[in-house]
Length: 325
Image (tube, rainbow, N blue to C red):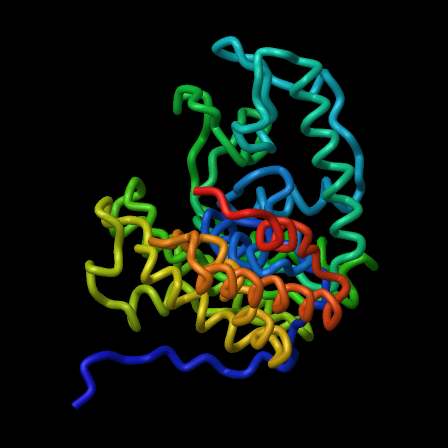
């Protein structure tokens, strides 16, 4: 007897590897996947302007990075002693107007270069509910301002598709592979019904986009969480965010579907190096542990020769230096 339904994920028609540069933009699920790719030293850029949740803010981020147009001081907002941008995460905010502007514009410059060089994008949509300013602009972050300052509404699938149509029509996106996901994080502030309505809206819109554009695919992170892992033990204590076990499982499905065999083999070897660095020996002064570190250093050098594009300086320095607790 089977007591769970494993999500069937069709082949996407392409595979990604270390020769492919990528950019990930979207919700905190993007950050989770991005951390793993960075851990394995893949050439990716993750949320250059900070975490964003709704489709229009994902689009606005990408449009800003496409143009490379820097923010002006007049575009910054001020409240509660902080300068900020409604298009950026709160981590960019500060009491120093010039410093805030400089950090944002440095991120735009780096993001523009990364997007130009990227051969693929991973776009994670978290919610179809948006907060609009009186001028109709959708904000990426409310920066803890009173809710009365915004109008809250649900986007329609047609709006989302039309907005991405405009973006994807630009020459920069003609040859890029696009991977859409819908975040498995529950937005219970919208209520159970509101959350389902939001996720359904996103899924409908994304599927219409994958039908229209070649090399545009959908990875079912939301469905894996809601169906394959249908149990509260796979959530954090807040009953909203996936647990580390759930994130690891979704990552494994993501990895197996999207990355080529060489990349997957390299993930395993790099994971062993990472585990070795984190290992704290009970008896560090033994000959056995010295040989262990020598073997890890030799493995690092083998990887460096086989994959010269990898930055392994930290690993080399760690395994070649005397061990310190």
